Image (cartoon, rainbow, N blue to C red):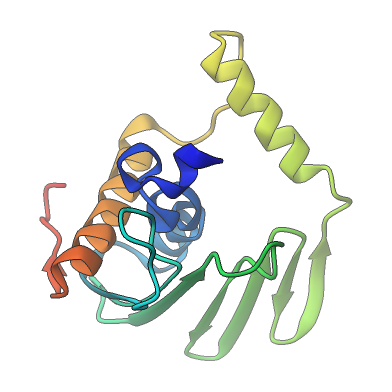
Length: 162
């Protein structure tokens, strides 16, 4: 996985992996107007950050936190927690909890189906791609802003017309 450790090839963990959580946050909370990411100081020279913490400010005034890490040799957890007036959501790759009550549990096939549709799209076959290109590009730009913030060690404002 030499390509993945090279940020010029993979974009780093936020761009290559956390982008899916950012996509979901944008869908549920709205557009992000400002980010401030702080990388851990344990990166190997020229490689991706091993851990990053970030603050996000959403257009409607909400604040969010993002934490990423590639310090483990296995997947620990991927998900999004949303606390809003009167409701708490916890979403992972396999389930949705609303106010602590299990609502949806995946049979393990959702990720397989999504991966299959992605491969179909890349190969030019008919695919059930539900996200318009413009939306994917907006999330990619958000991930790039977070990566830039971590490199520059300062907050980054996102353009309204991104």
